Image 1 (tube, rainbow, N blue to C red):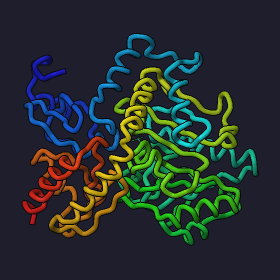
Image 2 (image 1 turned 60 degrees about the vertical axis):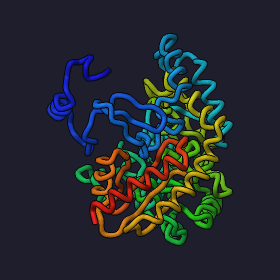
Image 3 (image 1 turned 45 degrees about the vertical axis):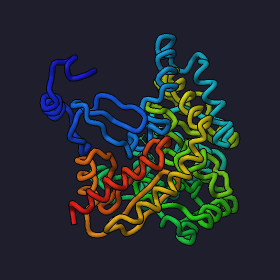
Image 4 (image 1 turned 90 degrees about the vertical axis):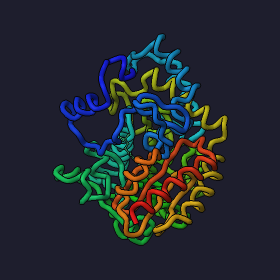
Length: 403
Ligand SMILES: Cc1ncc(COP(=O)(O)O)c(C=O)c1O
């Protein structure tokens, strides 16, 4: 839909949205009408270099042709059936997810937070059925982000963040330990702990990369104490960090993982994948959802992951991510650059990240601010070194304008 189709101006769209929508986002000051590859196009024809990728979603490029074709083809065949009949896209996607993620079985969901609900539920059910009624406690990391539904929000180790304020009490059964601090995790384990759950790279918490010793230590701890290791790969999964799943950097294997964002290429889909052993905890009636595993979303996801893997965007994420990080280190007021592949956080000294974000948007570069000091960049994984040079040049101008 374009403005002329509805006979409205940019201002009218924004006014109408503000009037009728509950506002929980700081919006960009334009109406987006089209997207392609590395660019988002506004109502006035202006193009914006996309270094936020719909927040790590459009990894094979905005409106990737193969994904668009898959959606168009599927939408005219079956849009929705519920999960009673088998469908071809769902089955092909399940096989591709398991074969590429290192897991044995998968359950589809509609979003990241729902994927985490499924992972929390399967771990708790596994614990109470295998070991006893109190064995449902999960340790998660401080500064983590796992989603906004009650289970995932309770797993989120950020009690003072807006995403938790006003929603207490959270679900019982969660304790929080310092990220990258194995001793702190060890000290929080009790006889009732069934799992440790974490993001290999904390996305919303500031782009904090787990160390190898930490991840390997957690795996060993889980094995010793008969606990499950659960990885939230919603932001890190599907090539973002230079490996198909970020856990693959660490020489370990979790018992379950969650994914969403990049797997759908823009269509809403999430998934929880796990070992055969963990999967036994779920049986008919344990968990489900009307839309989860929709044929259209599955067809899109199947095309999307094929694109990511066929085009070896893992490699591009690694090479371009390293290049980008080095360039970012040359910016004025830069304090630290943290990254794994193209999940990149640039922390600045003395200038609020939200102001840098706004100054970038004014200069036609889209980035996001996380916390008060870090600018996060998660561009499509097709980004080139030239795109990064352009982003760094705009960031430089933006920062200088605020000094
Ligand atoms: C690591 C992580 N987990 C969970 C979520 C929640 O995903 P969704 O917004 O699809 O519910 C996010 C979203 O940013 C995330 O980054």
